[in-house]
Image (cartoon, rainbow, N blue to C red):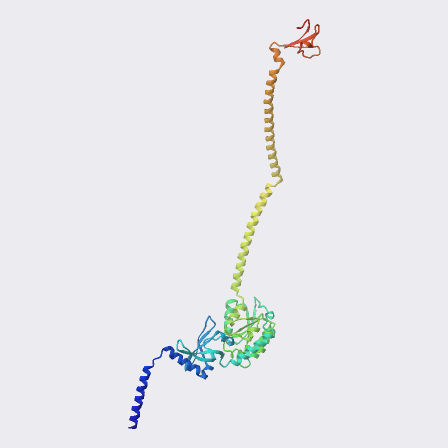
Length: 418
């Protein structure tokens, strides 16, 4: 009976509460705001550290990083704003195990909650990263990364030493590339431990042994892995062995995104062992192609030079022919003949002009000739001195005079004058 009464009371209370709830209607924004306030007031969510695996990682052009943090039991959206990326010491990618420290808040517009990351470290490798950064800074301050200490890599290496695991993918990649690019290059492998106990000492011994052997280049590397797997290449003793090595060293550790202390100390850093082989082994076919190109260029330039020389020789021959003394003499003879012709023409023209003028003068003179007058019946008188008598006053009575006619002269005496 009591149970029935209690049940009735609970039913009435439930109905009454439902009636009150029907009277209170809230918007979506109000509910989201209420939930956001609840998250804000929770002290635990203001600074929480979550462990998980990175998924759907996207680097936005604005500098923000969007990703999902997940484990076998669930997933949570996460974002790290560009202003908080200063403390991120690695390139975050899919599958990374990380520790994300930040605040869990509600994005009010979408009604979704997510963690706003303030700090992200690799799970289990945080201490190693700190150690890595400290050693990197120390060696950099000592000048071991300086470019002036980097030795040039020989272009035509014939003997290449390799310090890596004998069974790893790295040595196989290097061998394949060597066979393709230049099968005549001698590869000398020092089988070294590249991970675990004794790895650093094995790598150092390999570098020293190949350096003494006198190879042209030493490639030190291995395939990719976690920071802990690659740690042997972050050891100070390994870095010093590379730095003190007299032979040029190419570091080829991990994948393209992996960077070790050995990469900074080495004379050249290759992103992968395959890339190291490409850098160390010159491509014979490319070399032969280059020689063919140079040969063709030389032949073309030689041909052009010969053609140009032939053209110049023809020009010089013509110039020499023109300036030949015999040709000069013949040319001058021809010129003299031309001048002689011109001289004869001038002289003939001059003679013709003079003859014509002489004829005119002769005609004029003929018109004035005394002989012609005399032939017409005229005569003239001269005294004994031969002076022509033109005036009656020139003679006196009794004086002798000469009378000239066409065919002779007569003596006469002046008897009278009027």
